[in-house]
Amino acid sequence: MTEEPLPAEHLSPLAALVDEVLAGVGYEMAAATDAIDDAVSGYGGLFDPETTRGELRRALGELSAAELANPPVAESIDDSFVLYVDGSSRGNPGPAGAGAVIMDSEETQLARLGRPVGSRTGNNTAEYVALQLGLSELLSRYEPHSVDVRIDSMTVIRDVWGGNDPTEAGVETYSESIAAALSEVPNHRYTHLADSDPNPADALATVGADIAALGP
Image 1 (cartoon, rainbow, N blue to C red):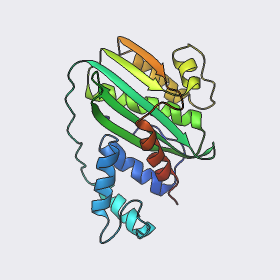
Image 2: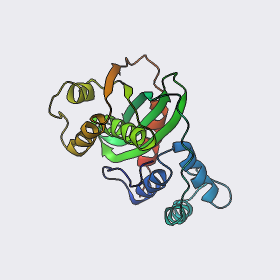
Image 3: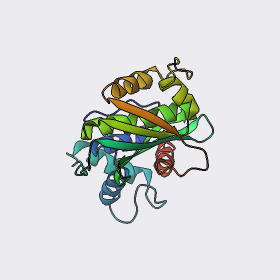
């Protein structure tokens, strides 16, 4: 799993602490929220209105200083994968999150990943971050020979697979990382998702946006 936190846009100190915890568990959203909820003393949790910002900050500080255990890597049946990705921004720009779901060739879920992107970030940037997140964790956990990326952003599709220069200002760090990751996968392709198509990464991106809205 990725050992160093991936790049992020501007986040509040509180949201940045949550992102550190997420990085510590390989961006597995459920593992991170469970760890945070367990660390909050008494009644409450990450999104519980009873949890004060002070309680949450103390819990996050303890977790960030601890050696967090990565969840075990789920076994894949082969070296072919499906990767669902999605980015979400409220207000565009606004609090934004990214989600990714790694599946094997039989579409059994292997990992459910999510993270905050930025407190005032556009949707296109969130889509780039989602793709970077999914590819980074796919490569750190497996040796993929092929991957079918399922994504609803035509902007990212045109830029990444169409060979265009990034059309969104400030995404060069993400686009370069994505290009480097795809160069390590012998066969990669995309499937464009319509708005009506189910995307399991959507809910994870929404939780990421919830985290990005935390502050200060």
